[in-house]
Amino acid sequence: MSRIRSAVTAVDRRSFLAATGVAGVSAGIGLALGPRGGSGTAAAAPEAVPAGVPAARTPAVTRPAPTRTAPARTTLDSVAAPRDTAAPFRRLDDGPGWRRVVREQLAAPRAGRAGRRTVLSSFVQLTDLHLVDVQHPVRTEYLRARQISGWRPQEALTVPGAVSLIEQINALKEGPATGTPLSFAVTTGDNTDNNSRAELDWFLTVMSGGRVTPNTGDGRRYEGVQNSAARLFWHPEDELRDTDKRLGFPRIDGFLAAAIRSVDSPGLRIPWYSTVGNHDGLASGAMADRTGFLADFAVGSKKLYGIPDADAQELLKLLSKGGDPTGAKLIELLRRSKRLMRSITPDPRRAPFTPHDYLAAHLDPAYTGAGPAGHGYTKAHLDSDTLYYTFPMGENITGVSLDTTDRGGHYTGSLGTTQLNWLKRTLKEHRDGYVVVFSHHNSWTMTNTHPDPAHPGEARHHGGEVVELLQRSPNVLAWVNGHSHRNSILPHGGFWEISTASHIDFPQLARVIEITDNKDGTLSLFTTLIESAAPHRTDFRDLSQTGLAALYRELSHNAPGSTTAPAGKPVDRNTELLVSR
Image (cartoon, rainbow, N blue to C red; front, side):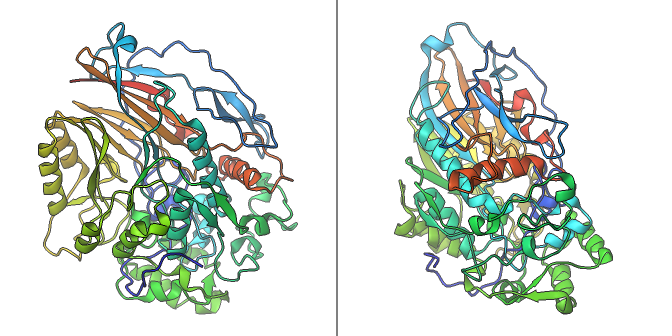
């Protein structure tokens, strides 16, 4: 039973999410609507100009024992890579690490800085976990008929995959560049996938520690697309020649039972802060249905597994452009497709949660874990229905967490005038120290101008305005975000924008960031990507919690439409980013 206690009666947001996508574009409903994920035509980050000389380093390759959790490592040491790139289903193993690149667009490196520097902050960014209830009725897996990346074969394993990432952070303990203990972690949104109460409980439990059973509906069996006999989807437990088996996907007996089995999370051993994303506030990460239909459908007894190709093509085209911010077209499709639906077990835990519910759940003592209580949110935020705040990151450095989701709908983001003015005041208040800004959306995906129904008449402000504001604030060091499921690091005059790939799409990464004062008029921001603790090499017979986490990675690598683009270029991965101060 979910530990989330707040009642959900409103239907302003929900969960439906077209399950998929693959990494590399903005992640709204379209996560799956375009190659390598993202919201339809989601744009990649503006091209970064490589600068600096890669630091000399010989990657050390370690091979974790297949029967236990791998030792702490980072992508400096080794990265999961295919053993045989020509194989139809590419098995993973240890590959060479990614060396650190020095980037000097904003400041020149000075000799001897390593011996002078002091550490200001050392932390981990997690983003786009997308913990998925794969049996949720409002999902649009059937769009795979017109877009192969419209459904991910790995989705049923998001919970053991996320737990393995928590285990890796706990094992890492300290920053790889400075050796300073990690002080805290920050999530930058899309913590859930379908905006459902069950997923929110799973996310908070994974982060804070406890047992998660990633199953809704019938507690004894799986009721989703992977045993539906629909050839669109990978059926791991039978001989059906489905789309994915034709691409080399294996048969794995016992997979579905293992996928809905309880998982134990140790929880993070360091404090963590939470930032909200569009999938945490809108149906499918894009729709603000205020009629109540999708909320009722989410907890009901019917699920749609397939639709005519013409309907799929029409809906895909609309959703990929964010052209259904209220969900009206999806609702229309569901209303006229009743004869195509199948019966499933209803479950009230699939109800959508509102922003108020999201805040209340974070403030629940059951989810405090390593703290802080509320994970950045307070009762004042609950009373005012606001999801932006500041928090201490170290001596003389402040974190600013923003809410870039527009409650009026659409997968792209923006800031309302009230929040933008708050940000201006906050930057001014901390002008004598340093500031790092956190958000879900990045600058190039903050293009949403839909009005927020909760604030009629209030203007919305795009990413370019935010960049200009941060450029005018010499205390800002970085803007850290996610959403696009792709690694990207961009210089913006006086600060760096650091966007990190997701943990649902390959290569399934998080990022360690260490900030140092070089005592020579410059600061360095070290970024180091990490994978989960699961071994790179998988064993299809190993359906243990660790084995499933390894399989989660390998399935994501082989997902139709998957490419190497989300990893970014060397200048977007392990870096030393210099900035003048």
